Image 1 (cartoon, rainbow, N blue to C red):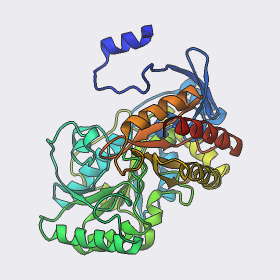
Image 2: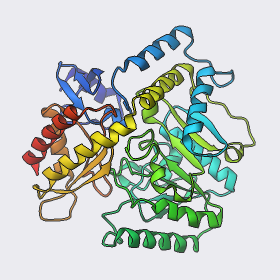
Image 3: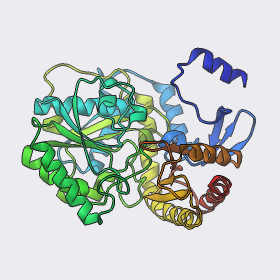
Length: 427
């Protein structure tokens, strides 16, 4: 055990998870690579949990942070803040929400908290619809709407949460249906649920479930849900903490795969926009954002140095078409992994879109999740010089692959080769 690991165990809570039997300390990074304290280089296919969105040590972002820090780092939202207004203006335009207002937070958890506050206040209801297998953060209210037992340490909640079918396409009672039949069955389930409860405030849903193992419904499911929700005045909150900014390749926002009936009422975001800086936020129609009748501020949300990072990062992403790169390189990567998976009985499914790819592992010859294999592949990939993540619903049996969006074809092939070797050694 390293000295740092021993110190970590002595001062950090037991529930603060670490990857690997012998945890590593990452000391620096560049591009799509990071180095540990022993000097070993890794290809990073997890990006600090989908947070290093463009690249490690991106010069444009580090320069913006350094220059802003040399002027002023922080003043709070009690004062006019040019970087915050400029970034809010860009995000409002990109959101697809008419008459949009933007409020910045420091994390995705806090963003979802804010969205829940807005929705329950606007609708005068504390009932929330959420998806099974979902994850929305670690705060008291976010845990209360998280449909993933492994990340829900308490059943206490200020909200009444009702869970809806549809977030996982290939498991559950509707898995055997066609896409159209699956969507119809989920919609009928939603209609039935609404007949048995007081009017909910909102449905919150991740277009692609992140911690849940990169699962998703057929395109158009949430549009069909939205038609039903509109009949009852229920709001739609799209949790884009992991899916936003072009990561899925086909769309800038994950909700756009379900946009037939219009944009969400509220969008939450975080992670990638700051490229490692603590930036989160909420976009909502003005009438919803302005529904609060008490004072509110944010001490650290929208602070100048993080806003400078977000502006520089967003500008780089748009100018270099990283969404298009995610679509092209991600498409090659997922097909490469599917070709490998077809030969391995322990791989149930390779799924995802863009640079958001899940590899679900099972006990060979069964449909039973295999968290032991997922942990072993994570270790083997690390030994080969590749960092990936893991997640899943009933059991943590899905590998999560989400590199920075500037990933090159050569790096994708290198990472796929390492992962193939790891999978073959375990599955």
